[in-house]
Image (cartoon, rainbow, N blue to C red; front, side, top):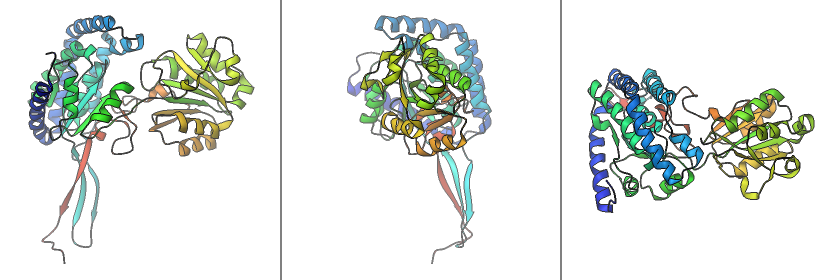
Length: 423
């Protein structure tokens, strides 16, 4: 389906949305056992469909290469046997979690004779818009289903074939468990007008979750007429404090930048305390250079052979590549000030053996995720024990940090009396 008019796109999304709302009613009442069965069935179907998924991914990789996608974006798109197994494992991990729906979040009795409970309830219908990462198809669907929500998925144009193959496996799980197939729907077109229609779908979609680069997320935040869970950028900092352990620091810095450069948890700026630098010299920068990272350095660090002088715009930049900005700072307070100025509220890590310094870092910064002596690459719902995530939310309303199944619920109040009346 190509070259949709606005009318065509609105009609398509209206059809998907109407079916999703009907499915959401059934999911809200579905037992934990049926949702569990659907997820396990989907995981088994993904393993059974491995070759079909890989074949579809080859088509997507060819399409993306013709479009000139960067190596980091191609890495996001590429599937292999291990990544397919990881998708299935993620589905099983989500299935194994306690059901978040119906949890009693709080309860109390009032002198007026009322017993009040605050109980977790599904959001309804979730729209997920994402770029070039076909595994998000499985992750988002699993979390939506676990939390009793219907979901409409709109993957990147480059990942359409892979997403369709994965979606078929997910529908197999729904069918086997006797749940509505419209619980998980995929927008069947690359046309961007469908994205605009999703963002306009008030009354059909309860929340939009964008997962992708700054351009996509910015567009969604500007144009959406429904609530949005989003982070605009992952400008993650690592600060090597004067009391950092050298070997821990070397391991963490290298992993935070180089494990996977194209994910939002990749470190984009290294801050080094002058005390650390006086003790250990250029070791952290040299490790990065030796690993093939382009280090855009400021001040004294720019004198290290192999570095590139940093431009002002390099700080506050999400490179998503083998590039990192670096500078010296005078202690934790200057590091905090830098992060407040240039950070995006995603993830920051401090490397220190000082409890007091770590406590100051944690208290003074308000990013969604703060770490100590750990790689920013752990900023991931799977690593947090959520099985998977639908994204990292950096806003301060409702969901924040990794958005797992629990974060895809709202709540309602259940009030019980015994003939109570108000005077």
